[in-house]
Length: 209
Image (cartoon, rainbow, N blue to C red; front, side, top):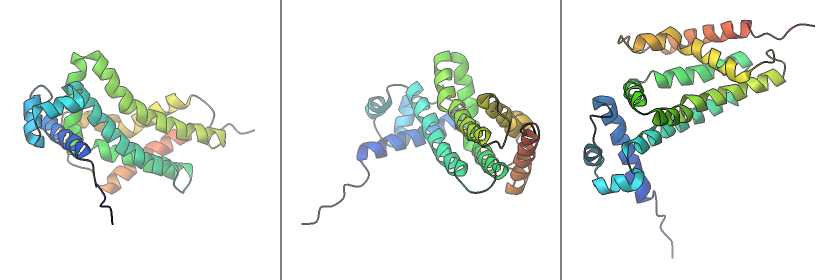
Protein backbone atom coordinates (compact mmCIF):
# COMPACT_ATOMS: atom_id res chain seq x y z
CA UNK A 1 0.00 0.00 0.00
CA UNK A 2 1.30 3.43 -0.97
CA UNK A 3 1.47 5.92 1.85
CA UNK A 4 0.36 9.38 0.76
CA UNK A 5 2.71 12.20 1.67
CA UNK A 6 1.14 14.46 4.28
CA UNK A 7 2.32 17.54 2.37
CA UNK A 8 2.86 20.86 4.10
CA UNK A 9 1.76 20.77 7.77
CA UNK A 10 -1.45 22.69 8.36
CA UNK A 11 0.05 24.52 11.34
CA UNK A 12 2.88 25.79 9.14
CA UNK A 13 0.40 26.91 6.50
CA UNK A 14 -1.58 28.85 9.10
CA UNK A 15 1.58 30.40 10.53
CA UNK A 16 2.73 31.59 7.11
CA UNK A 17 -0.74 32.93 6.31
CA UNK A 18 -0.69 34.96 9.53
CA UNK A 19 2.73 36.40 8.72
CA UNK A 20 1.73 37.23 5.13
CA UNK A 21 -1.38 39.03 6.33
CA UNK A 22 0.53 40.88 9.04
CA UNK A 23 3.19 42.10 6.61
CA UNK A 24 0.60 43.72 4.35
CA UNK A 25 -1.47 45.16 7.20
CA UNK A 26 1.55 46.59 9.02
CA UNK A 27 2.83 48.12 5.79
CA UNK A 28 -0.57 49.59 4.92
CA UNK A 29 -1.91 50.66 8.32
CA UNK A 30 1.09 50.68 10.64
CA UNK A 31 1.55 48.37 13.57
CA UNK A 32 -0.82 50.22 15.88
CA UNK A 33 -3.47 50.33 13.16
CA UNK A 34 -3.50 46.57 12.64
CA UNK A 35 -5.08 44.79 15.64
CA UNK A 36 -4.84 41.04 16.11
CA UNK A 37 -8.48 40.71 15.04
CA UNK A 38 -7.68 42.26 11.65
CA UNK A 39 -4.65 40.00 11.17
CA UNK A 40 -6.76 36.95 12.01
CA UNK A 41 -9.49 37.98 9.56
CA UNK A 42 -7.03 38.69 6.75
CA UNK A 43 -5.25 35.37 7.26
CA UNK A 44 -8.45 33.34 7.45
CA UNK A 45 -7.87 31.99 10.95
CA UNK A 46 -9.33 32.69 14.37
CA UNK A 47 -7.90 35.19 16.85
CA UNK A 48 -7.22 32.26 19.17
CA UNK A 49 -5.05 30.66 16.47
CA UNK A 50 -3.01 33.84 16.08
CA UNK A 51 -2.38 34.00 19.83
CA UNK A 52 -1.55 30.29 19.91
CA UNK A 53 1.18 30.77 17.30
CA UNK A 54 2.64 34.10 18.43
CA UNK A 55 1.18 35.42 21.67
CA UNK A 56 1.31 39.10 20.72
CA UNK A 57 2.13 41.53 17.88
CA UNK A 58 5.73 41.92 19.04
CA UNK A 59 6.25 38.20 18.42
CA UNK A 60 4.61 38.51 14.99
CA UNK A 61 6.95 41.37 14.12
CA UNK A 62 9.98 39.42 15.25
CA UNK A 63 8.89 36.42 13.18
CA UNK A 64 8.42 38.63 10.10
CA UNK A 65 11.88 40.14 10.49
CA UNK A 66 13.42 36.69 10.97
CA UNK A 67 11.63 35.27 7.93
CA UNK A 68 12.72 38.14 5.69
CA UNK A 69 16.25 38.01 7.03
CA UNK A 70 16.38 34.23 6.50
CA UNK A 71 15.38 34.81 2.89
CA UNK A 72 18.02 37.47 2.43
CA UNK A 73 20.64 35.42 4.30
CA UNK A 74 20.04 32.49 1.95
CA UNK A 75 20.68 34.76 -1.04
CA UNK A 76 23.70 36.42 0.55
CA UNK A 77 25.26 33.11 1.59
CA UNK A 78 24.97 31.92 -2.01
CA UNK A 79 26.76 35.07 -3.18
CA UNK A 80 29.54 34.66 -0.60
CA UNK A 81 30.29 31.19 -1.94
CA UNK A 82 29.87 32.12 -5.60
CA UNK A 83 32.53 32.46 -8.24
CA UNK A 84 34.48 35.58 -9.08
CA UNK A 85 36.98 37.84 -7.37
CA UNK A 86 36.32 39.69 -4.12
CA UNK A 87 34.95 42.75 -5.89
CA UNK A 88 32.40 40.71 -7.83
CA UNK A 89 31.27 38.81 -4.73
CA UNK A 90 30.88 42.00 -2.75
CA UNK A 91 28.90 43.57 -5.59
CA UNK A 92 26.52 40.60 -5.73
CA UNK A 93 26.14 40.70 -1.93
CA UNK A 94 25.43 44.44 -2.02
CA UNK A 95 22.93 44.15 -4.86
CA UNK A 96 20.97 41.42 -3.06
CA UNK A 97 20.81 43.62 0.04
CA UNK A 98 19.90 46.87 -1.76
CA UNK A 99 17.30 45.17 -3.96
CA UNK A 100 15.51 43.63 -0.99
CA UNK A 101 15.54 46.85 1.02
CA UNK A 102 14.21 48.71 -2.02
CA UNK A 103 11.06 46.59 -2.31
CA UNK A 104 7.99 48.85 -1.68
CA UNK A 105 6.47 46.50 0.89
CA UNK A 106 9.78 46.28 2.75
CA UNK A 107 10.12 50.07 2.80
CA UNK A 108 6.62 50.48 4.23
CA UNK A 109 7.29 47.78 6.80
CA UNK A 110 10.60 49.42 7.70
CA UNK A 111 8.81 52.67 8.50
CA UNK A 112 6.31 50.80 10.68
CA UNK A 113 9.10 48.99 12.50
CA UNK A 114 10.95 52.27 13.09
CA UNK A 115 7.91 53.75 14.81
CA UNK A 116 7.46 50.66 16.96
CA UNK A 117 11.13 50.68 17.95
CA UNK A 118 10.73 54.08 19.57
CA UNK A 119 7.96 52.72 21.80
CA UNK A 120 9.79 49.59 22.96
CA UNK A 121 13.59 49.48 23.20
CA UNK A 122 13.63 45.73 23.90
CA UNK A 123 11.65 45.04 20.74
CA UNK A 124 13.98 47.38 18.85
CA UNK A 125 17.01 45.37 19.96
CA UNK A 126 15.40 42.09 18.92
CA UNK A 127 14.57 43.57 15.50
CA UNK A 128 18.12 44.82 15.07
CA UNK A 129 19.73 41.50 16.05
CA UNK A 130 17.47 39.50 13.71
CA UNK A 131 17.80 41.94 10.80
CA UNK A 132 20.68 44.40 10.28
CA UNK A 133 22.84 42.75 12.93
CA UNK A 134 22.64 39.39 11.19
CA UNK A 135 23.42 40.85 7.76
CA UNK A 136 26.38 42.73 9.24
CA UNK A 137 27.75 39.47 10.65
CA UNK A 138 27.45 37.69 7.28
CA UNK A 139 29.33 40.48 5.56
CA UNK A 140 31.95 40.58 8.34
CA UNK A 141 32.53 36.85 7.83
CA UNK A 142 33.15 37.40 4.12
CA UNK A 143 35.61 40.22 4.88
CA UNK A 144 37.37 38.18 7.57
CA UNK A 145 38.06 35.45 5.01
CA UNK A 146 39.30 38.06 2.52
CA UNK A 147 41.68 39.43 5.17
CA UNK A 148 43.00 35.93 5.88
CA UNK A 149 43.73 35.45 2.17
CA UNK A 150 45.53 38.78 1.98
CA UNK A 151 43.00 40.32 -0.43
CA UNK A 152 42.45 43.28 1.87
CA UNK A 153 44.34 44.66 4.84
CA UNK A 154 43.72 43.10 8.23
CA UNK A 155 41.50 45.09 10.54
CA UNK A 156 38.16 45.16 12.33
CA UNK A 157 35.89 43.13 10.05
CA UNK A 158 32.70 44.23 11.80
CA UNK A 159 33.62 47.90 11.44
CA UNK A 160 34.53 47.29 7.79
CA UNK A 161 31.15 45.64 7.22
CA UNK A 162 29.41 48.66 8.74
CA UNK A 163 31.44 51.02 6.53
CA UNK A 164 30.58 49.08 3.38
CA UNK A 165 26.87 48.81 4.22
CA UNK A 166 26.82 52.57 4.81
CA UNK A 167 28.36 53.14 1.39
CA UNK A 168 25.79 50.86 -0.26
CA UNK A 169 22.73 52.37 1.41
CA UNK A 170 23.93 55.89 2.13
CA UNK A 171 21.99 58.86 0.80
CA UNK A 172 19.60 56.69 -1.21
CA UNK A 173 18.11 55.16 1.94
CA UNK A 174 17.69 58.62 3.46
CA UNK A 175 16.05 59.95 0.30
CA UNK A 176 13.56 57.06 0.11
CA UNK A 177 12.30 57.90 3.60
CA UNK A 178 11.02 61.25 2.34
CA UNK A 179 10.58 61.00 -1.44
CA UNK A 180 9.10 58.38 -3.74
CA UNK A 181 12.04 58.06 -6.13
CA UNK A 182 10.71 55.06 -8.00
CA UNK A 183 12.56 51.76 -8.27
CA UNK A 184 16.11 51.92 -9.60
CA UNK A 185 16.95 49.82 -12.63
CA UNK A 186 19.25 46.82 -12.23
CA UNK A 187 21.95 48.74 -14.09
CA UNK A 188 21.62 51.77 -11.79
CA UNK A 189 21.73 49.58 -8.68
CA UNK A 190 24.81 47.72 -9.88
CA UNK A 191 26.55 50.98 -10.76
CA UNK A 192 25.90 52.41 -7.28
CA UNK A 193 26.92 49.22 -5.48
CA UNK A 194 30.05 48.67 -7.58
CA UNK A 195 31.19 52.26 -7.09
CA UNK A 196 30.83 51.80 -3.33
CA UNK A 197 32.75 48.50 -3.40
CA UNK A 198 35.60 50.02 -5.39
CA UNK A 199 35.78 52.97 -3.02
CA UNK A 200 35.92 50.60 -0.06
CA UNK A 201 38.55 48.35 -1.64
CA UNK A 202 40.71 51.33 -2.61
CA UNK A 203 41.02 52.20 1.08
CA UNK A 204 41.49 48.60 2.19
CA UNK A 205 44.39 47.40 0.06
CA UNK A 206 46.99 45.38 1.98
CA UNK A 207 50.25 47.16 2.68
CA UNK A 208 53.00 46.30 0.19
CA UNK A 209 56.27 44.94 1.46
